[in-house]
Image (cartoon, rainbow, N blue to C red; front, side, top):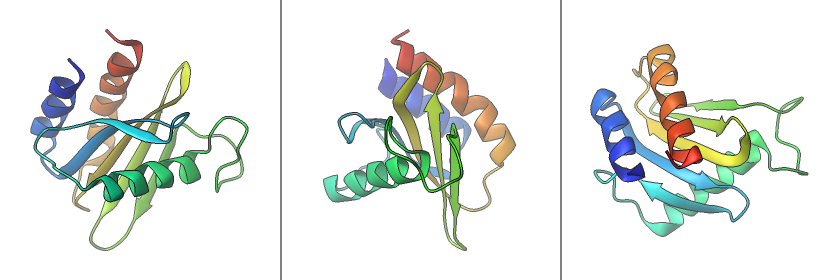
Length: 120
């Protein structure tokens, strides 16, 4: 189940305070990890940031071209957006502490996203 997949990813990387699966075609967060209750407004803003950062089909992103990964870093927070292979509107949105081991997280998050996106 997708919630369990997100919870498992969170247990491996507790620095990620919120991990959410979004559908950019509907501009909605569909699933979040169960340990991270968020207000609907915060989830809507996270999804909007993902759409701006990665772009939606037919809508350019902030960068020079299409990307499957975007990071927004501040002193207190790291936000990571990952796009699924084969499903360009399926995105993982992650709000993390800045001390996250990013390469290790990305190595674990990509397969989790693919599993959720494919419905496996």
